[in-house]
Image 1: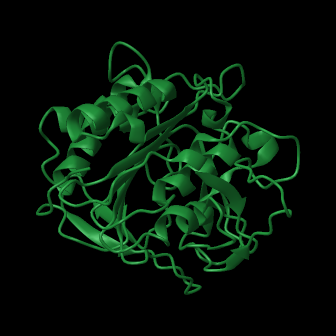
Image 2: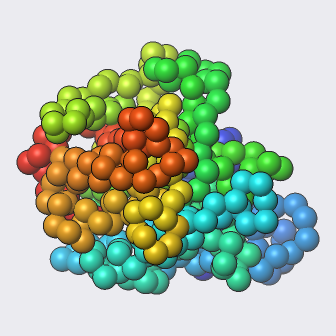
Length: 344
């Protein structure tokens, strides 16, 4: 059993084992001490002010035995349609369902280790609010061990805002928009990096698949893979000018995103011909299903080619040059994208 508490320094949600009186934050390394009322029964509710609430599923994360020959796999999948609002999207929940099916059927993720956050969920802790999304990301990386494979998929709105701490090469922070972003705020790339990138230990691999506008460097990873139309590539250094640490604690992070930081990502039925999807999520899954995802390079090239070829049939983002959307690949370390096999 676990109790959810916030780090007393950086406010990151932490899972406190039953009976423990202190816990070290994996992000800022601050030690938070917990004082229980004398003779009071131990509570599994959040140690936050306000009325009692039902225990969150994140307090009781799926249990795994220590990995031996079997690799542990965990995923957080977020799809937000913003239904009944002026921001409504049609394909994001479809994206989430398709990604869950892909992880289970192709990559053998246990269904019990996948957290789905969409407006269709009946559990209030699985609605994609800002608070629930941050808790889910914290759950994703907690207690990870060498050999673990983690996935974060997001399909929804993205945006950008002026960088206020000097850690962006282009002067802008990239952001994700939770369901309640208009009242509770957006999730900035600095927060995402602090929660799921910087604490990641050696031997753990994390893939992010981010289908949103302005999402190119939304994990704030230090290297961006630039690729031209012939498939030639080079790595671009995005280390912050301020010198702030944006790398992992020895783990490996690779992110596929829907477009460059200054581009939009399409929500369209032009690719599937049946229903609305995110263009990037559709092409990501299509590349795997059609055998074009042997390496990270072949995956990225196939996705970019499919979206470029479909550009003329997507009028909302098309034009003389077709669809102005180029999926991006970022990583915490540069590597040969055409020799490294792709796998989740």
